[in-house]
Image 1 (cartoon, helix red, strand yellow):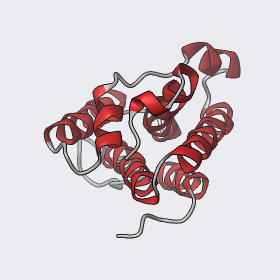
Image 2: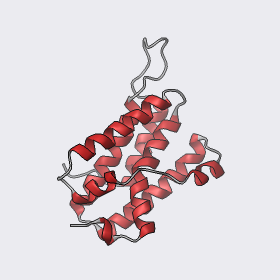
Image 3: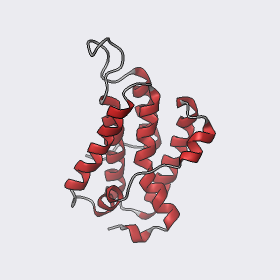
Amino acid sequence: MTRKADFNAEEWSTVVEGPAYASLRVISADRGGTLRESMAVGRVYQEARREQGESPLLDEIVASPPAIDQTRVREAGGSPAAIAPIVAERLRAAMEILEAKATPEEVDAYKKFVMTVSQAAATAHKEGGFLGIGGKQISEAEDKALDEISLVLGAPPAS
């Protein structure tokens, strides 16, 4: 069983920011709906806090406030094309840390949580349409972002 105490401060920060970076990637994929998407991500965190007990490591991750290094995002220009490599790099770093220190079950729980957060952002706001009529639940750009995140995380959780 892996706990927060098993990580140094930099490693912990990298692991905790992974889901936030993943949601940023999806939110930035298409303009519009940013508030709804951010609220959906917040609800996923709230739900994960309520359902504590399945993974002590994940419990500690969701108890830590999600944050990202805004300087990195600003320096990259903030466009989806500029954000994508930052997100990939930060998620890869988080996965390397977790794979070195956590159990396979904890790594799977983390992957599942990151994808849940990302999918919540993607489905929070219909893209296209007019006055809420028509449109797609997940835009092509958001779908591409989800694929990128999934590829970085590696093999899907064994569930």
